[in-house]
Amino acid sequence: MQILLVEDDPSHARVIRHALERHGHSVSLATTAAEGKAKRDETPYDVIIVDYVLPDATGLTLLETQPGRRPHPATVFLTATDSAEVCLAAIRAGAADYIVKGTEYLRTLPDRVAQVAQCGQSPRVTPLLKSFPGAPPASAALDQLLGSSTEMVQLRRTVLRAAQSNFPVLVEGPTGAGKEIVARAIHSISRGVSKPFIAINCAALPPDLFESEMFGHVKGAFTSALGDRGGLVLSAHEGSLFLDEVGELAFENQAKLLRLLQDLEFRPVGSDKQHRADVRVIAATNRPLQRGVGQREFREDLFYRLAVVQIIVPPLAQRSGDVRLLARAMVKSFAPRLGLMTPEIDEEAYQQLERHNWPGNVRELENVVKRTLASLEGTHISSFMITPGDAPSMSEDRSYLERLLVEFSGNLTQVARELGVSRPTLYKRLESLGIRPKGFRSRQ
Image 1 (spheres, helix red, strand yellow):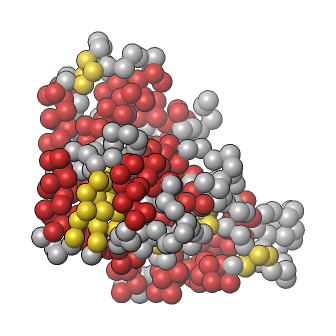
Image 2 (cartoon, helix red, strand yellow; image 1 turned 45 degrees about the vertical axis):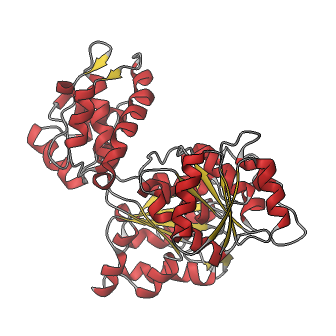
C-alpha cells in the first residue's frame, strides 16, 4: 500500500513509518502542508496520514483542499489531544478516521489504516455535517461525552457516524452511564436538530396506555377521551423520539412499536386514518436486548429494527482514567449553581475517587460531587469530603433527600435518577427514614 505521511516531528515520523513499513507498506514523508499537497497531487496514494500541527498550516488545510480531478485517497487525521472540536473539524473536512496520539496508537495504527483504505472515504460526511442551519456546534454536543480513554474516543466517533443517517439507534449500557446524553448528542448533530427531542421512560409507562401515549387518540376513543390528542410520535415530528428502558416494554406493545419502525405509519386510538411517521427513534436499555431475545422476553424482529446502529456506552469502571476529568468538569459546572467559587480538588481526593469502582457509574459520581459541594467549607475539596459509598451510592443525610424531593416535587423517578439508584431502592430508603414523598408533591 502506498501511504503519504505528513508529519513534521522527526521522532513521530520515524516510529510511524517504521510501524507501517513492518506491515509491508511503502511510506513517503512530507514535513509541511505545502509539501504534502504537492506530493499528494503528483502520486496516487492509497492513504494519507496527516498531523494537525504543521509548520506552515494545520493539517485541516491539506484535507480541505483535496483536488476534485480524481477520487482523493482515504485520509487519516492525527491529533495529539482528544479535542472534540478538532476531531469534528477533521471529519467535516473529509477525514475517514482520526487517531489520538496516545500510549498505544502505534499498535493499532496499521489496522486502522488498512480499514480506511478498504472502506475508502465517505463523501456524505462533509455536506451533511455542514448543512444544519441553527444547530449548535457539534463539538458542544460531543463535549458532553467527556473522557480521553480509548472507549470514549470510539464512542464519540460512533455518535458522529450515527448522526449521519436517520436510521434507528440502540444505545446499550449500565444504569447511570450516560445513555440519554448519547441520545441527545446524536439529536444535536442530526438533521432534526431544530425539531423536538421527546423522551419517554418505557418502564414507567403502563402497558394499557402505551398506544394512547405514543400514537394519540381521537375524541370518544375511550371513556376519558374528551377530545383529540396527539401522541409522542406526533410531538417528535421530524425530530427524535427517545425510548428509554425499551427492554421493559410490555411484549404486546413491542409489536406496535415494530409496526411504527417497519411501516413508518401509525394510527391514533379510535381513528381509522393512518398517519405518516417522520421521526428518528433512539432507544436505550440497561440490559442486553439480545439476551432478552434468547429468553423470549423481547421480539427478535424488533431488536433488529432498533439495532440498525448499535452503540455501547462503557461503564465508568472500564474507564477509570476519565474520573479526574469528569469530577473536575462537574465541580466547575455545579459550584456556581450553589453560589460557590470553583474549588480546587486535592490529589488525595482524586485518588480516592479513582480507587472506587463506581457501580452507579457517571450518575453516582455526579451525586457524590453534588453532596460534597453542598457541605463544602473553604476553597479546596480534600479526601475526607468525598466519600463514595457502596453501590448504589445514596446519601445517608435525611435533609439531602428532602431537598431532592422538594426540587423534584416528590417525583421518585427523577429523585432516583439523580441519586443513581433504582426507584425501589429509593423507596425503601425513604421508608426507613420515615419520609413520605406525597408530602412534597405540592411544594414549589
